[in-house]
Length: 472
Length: 124
Image 1 (cartoon, chains in turn purple, orange):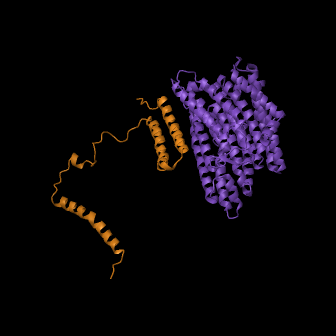
Image 2: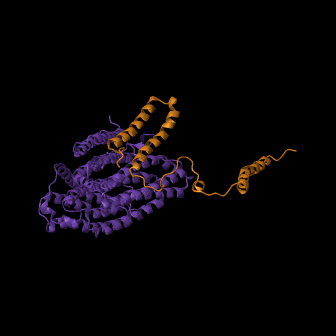
Image 3: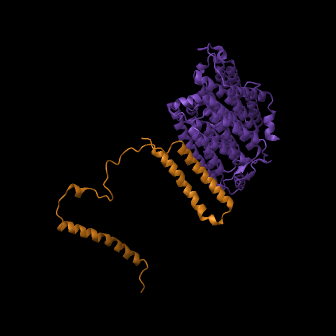
């Protein structure tokens, strides 16, 4: 029987073996390392299905009560592994761009393929963490490996700028996290979330000091999930980072942030101020993300603002503490975001990242144009796609909780979203192409994109498997 | 009559003031009456022990130096973890020994990787 901590150990060992192999086998084609990493992560992904989760949520299972194997954590371990595999596939397509930015023998591709494995291990630890110390350590593993990835093609000034911005602001948000943990520890004397819940139930605990600590933690997590007003880094970093890394940031980092947010908020949900604060953040995020996305001409920047907007919808689910709706939305978000970025990686190397560069894509590559179409309509929330049902569950939860303001603003901003997502569709199908040569797609990418299209439509029609995976 | 117990501190303060002042006063008197004023480059130079300094201290260090600094730092921090382990060593089970060996192995792997990548070759 496989126990859950073995999964992370397996991922870490895989990363170290590939790293050592890469350092000494200089003659091989570096893409072999990416294939090895994909194969290794796929084996771990299969192994996760044989892990028996503990029945009750947040139940500690080891590492001095730091670690839990509840359904949510096992599900998100699979989520993290799947994301990493898809990102690695994108990275293989992106390899020429990395190679061209490193003149000489050291092309840096080996590290480009290896660092995501360690990020994946960090994400897997993070979704199992039920102690503030462990949350902090695994969050740092994720963040530090992202520092490397974001500024990887550092000869490019835009990427360097993105790397510096991410480093400075992320370090600042980490400082907020540590300070918040210190306050909460100072009041309750505990770092374990379960024991903090118990400590908060006793009347002698100072509520206002705890609230201050929680607000500081919320600042750090708000940075990770790109919620307004902590979103200022998102457009520049998303635009400057290598495209596969942008996809990884926008899916992996955000999903892990939401899992931590769901876990951390549970002890504090009894405080009435917390609810009001989250509603305010959700409203601001929805309005800012959607309105700022409207005038964007660069597709990566547009997807960055759209990522902020989707944080707003996810926060509606968090306000209602409906983890099932949040999880389903995150799965839908994974599928459609990876779909858009996978197409973007391939097309951007031929033409560019502007929306105008997608003109006439339907003639040059009907397959890629269709994939982008499905990604965009799903992000917008057209029925029969996963994105629609994600929004449906979120709004349904909000209506049950009588969060009228959130529902009204949410529905209006969805209308906004239709405009800027369909702008891309219009460019692909109704604009004449500047060039008419075909765009070639590698077999692996073709399989991955095909699977993502199928999954997006399938979950839009039949969402039961995801809902079952959490209840069972 | 017993003296005030804090009297000793007053005496010590007095001695502490007088003791360094006497040599200074003697040196001043010596200069006042016996030392001829003959300034020269050797005499007015700033006293430093050790070898004579060459060149300016405000030079640029090769930025490659930071790689060595990082690798040094890793093993510096490792020592902090090893000291408590070494102190408690006799009372620990075999599992702890294996755990610390794994920890060392991870760090050594980092060094081997950096070596294999050529981080330790000094390029001019």
